[in-house]
Image (cartoon, rainbow, N blue to C red):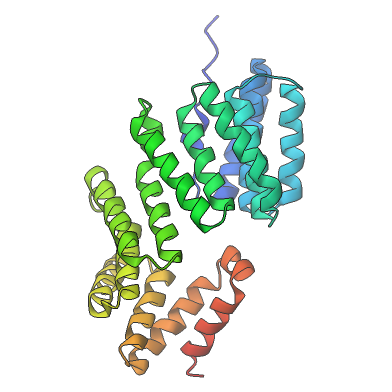
Length: 294
């Protein structure tokens, strides 16, 4: 009899831009995972289903799914991939539902357990999540710790985090008003991304241009956003964040009439984002007001 088909690597099934479709793929895999008799794999699969639920703001569902994973692993289990993922996804579900104080100790345990188990990529993920729930200076310290850990790691998947970590550290500096330091980190993130994925660094280019506006280099910022706008339009992929920055640059230059249609388009696109609508209603409202000329 032929050997059963190997169970797939779960990371390859993810589409973070479409968590609902990813959930469907993961759930279709559940019968095979149960039949395989590998509780670790099944628990890991359940943690990833929970993550798709959290990304859809179905936090109660996520916790129920994580309870199933916890039951499979049992109490007192040593550090393991599934166990670290359970801590990470429980923490993410808590943090996304505005319970960061409860999430923090879970991320810290995930960091310690992942390092103890030699799971470098999950250790980096955990450190970056600690940074998300910490205050500004502690966040920077944790992002720098994650950068140093990833740079020293022999795990290629852990090193793949570096572009995002440079970007995160850039935003830590930016929030603290250290715009020069922020620009340096954003440029580092851009160089990292362009070296590995030429032509696919639009997010990093946006961050550099955004920081140039904070530095008062508004004409340069506008030129950067204008290039991104043209590329998005050519690809048929309008970006609300690019329109928002175009508008802010034009407004800063005293060109209110030119800014207004960009504010209007930014509002039309970004108001559809459920996370922005929930977490930044004032920002969405301001875009609407400026887009309508109020």
